[in-house]
Image (cartoon, rainbow, N blue to C red):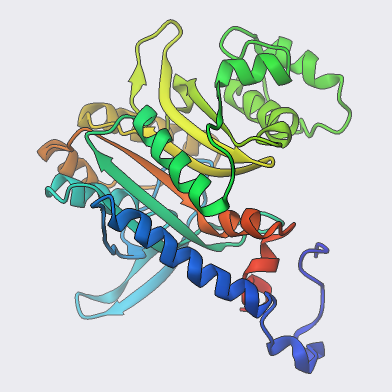
Length: 338
């Protein structure tokens, strides 16, 4: 077991391990943070919603691994597998299609296989959707929130995905071949290239981003990265530039990815194509198949209003606010003490 989670048999747990890891002052600051966030949205007329943490479907993204549980009872007497949600996105979009208008949610989310300095498998997420916004307008609002909560200077730096690659890695991510990326990475002995193939262009881009670029983003000045390659659109609208780019952004502060937002895809036919593409990637990667969310697709068929949405990690936001080096410093009970 890693140093993050001490390897200690259950029988050897000492008596003081019932105590919270985070300092009580940190927990009180978390409470004030939640209050300030709610006040931020109150004055902007964005109302708070709740959606289920349990769902019969989950994200098809092959890079995100869901946790499951089972319910047996009225309605499902023979038992039914449910997913612990990785994000409230699908359910919130169903509310948007119902005519909710701009909404936000503070909730728990869950992801399997993610634990470390910046990850806990159970974490707190702030997600919000603004009707009538595009990703540029939403970047402005994310900047307002982060600057207000963290007491940091605005304006934030803004770099396109291409500019970030050219500035910090010396390559054009839209034009560089996989062989060129492989040769570039080969100069750095600590880059983990095991398992990457010449067919996995996005995998090479992710490797360069995570090891060469991300650690240098947002140091001294918060930084937005935007206009991702179309292959990294996730659920974002793709703009027909040359090359085509996704109207997607991420916010980095001190090398930490804090938020991920989009101009939301509203075309149900394109969403079906992307679900099928994800399922094919899962099949090739020998991952568990995930059924497309038919309720989300029905909501898109009904009509999703033009909108932009963003997910922001509140645990990481609190880490940055307190200058903490590990997520454990701001959680009362991380996964190994839950």
